[in-house]
Length: 297
Figure (cartoon, rainbow, N blue to C red):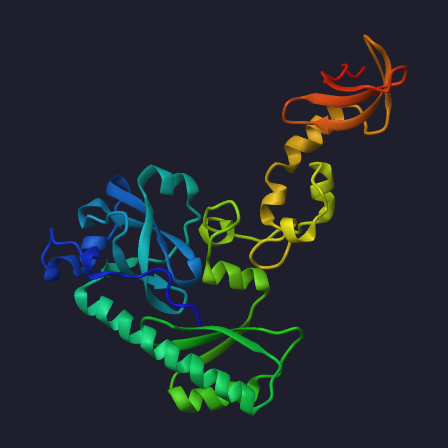
């Protein structure tokens, strides 16, 4: 199991308010005329938006305990204010409970150790039952109400008996969740060949269908290794500039077509969409050069 890639350091705990004040639930109620929108990121890069009272002094990078589906969890504030307001996809009924205390952060460290132990046990029980599945990560929710085992598998797995066994071992609610390789990359995170964090672990909410045709539209060489991301699938960013290339391609002559130029007829042998140039070979001389494309009528 990959180590927790969102470390929660004690230095995140604010010192401007005494503990008894920043854990007061009344402080986090959010009147509409004095509220702040914040984005909180949890394990696996799950993001939820919350409204909080500005008096709560929630700041970027603060660790907080907040409501999530069926319980509460520890996360980190990753966006605040106007940017969060623009980006938000607010889930009604969710609240920030409190800023994380030193005890909360210590508990998270303990849960991290529990997860490592559970990962080892999970792999042992999977091997003992000869199940064709690959365990990716174990997540123990902060309120300890459940433990989620994320796994990869080529086909559907009947893991009902495994769930019963794990529930007996760990004495908590067990959930086994099958994910794909792109979901794995999103949960684990990493750095892409561009040198930036993986898009899926930063801001992509949904995975869209990506095809090699998108690469062809952008005049990229069909090299599977160069077009594939960290997950082994085609890069999601192949779609980012697709609409631009589709529009520009409509304005440019087709590859292999013959166009009339100031130097006579020429065959289009290449397209430079970004510079709005076409590479042509002249019929009479056989020489090549880049020129501005003729206007389409």
